[in-house]
Length: 247
Image (cartoon, rainbow, N blue to C red; front, side):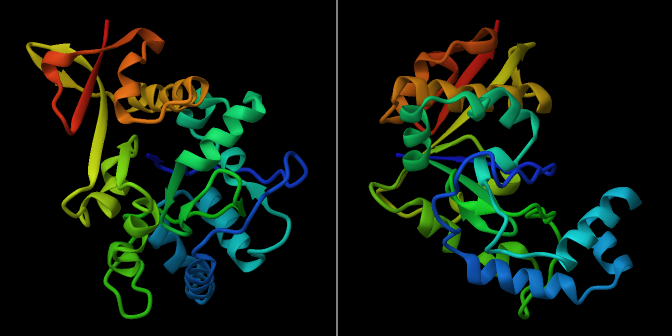
């Protein structure tokens, strides 16, 4: 089983915090994207990122100085979003680190897919960005089915904790025999399940921690998750969607 999650926009660089194990599998593609971005003007880059001047200046400088092989931070410790704060990988024990290294995959517009201990450098490039690299219309076309193939290696069982922006890179290419289960974290309002972005991110991080602590080997094992007041609701779920309601 592989567990997929989204990256975070905010990243940090702490190369001495924990040793990196490997480089990302799609390093050549990341280098191709970096070369393309480095040729953009500041205004073109800012438009690509759709962000404030402060964030654009920081990331424009990052790409100009970028080294993809030195001064790297393990991916799981580099991303700083809400999901990662609630996952709290910095306090994982070695067996939990080993678990996520085997089972967890972080999807990325820049790196494609990274393992938790792959060495990465801070970047900004969301999957939805209109990056017309190598004659492609966008990053979805640039990556094609490569992300799916990297994630589906093994038994083709995938537990989806990623946002739709990222999960479509995998879900679109599913083949017969694959098992793809999406976890939904919501509240029941007027008989309908409604997800709230921030709460869902918190729950996804907690779910990764739960799976690592329990050594989950199958999507079914996720049903026991009960952090942050969530409970699995069988009557609202199906074979491809597990619904957890905040009580």
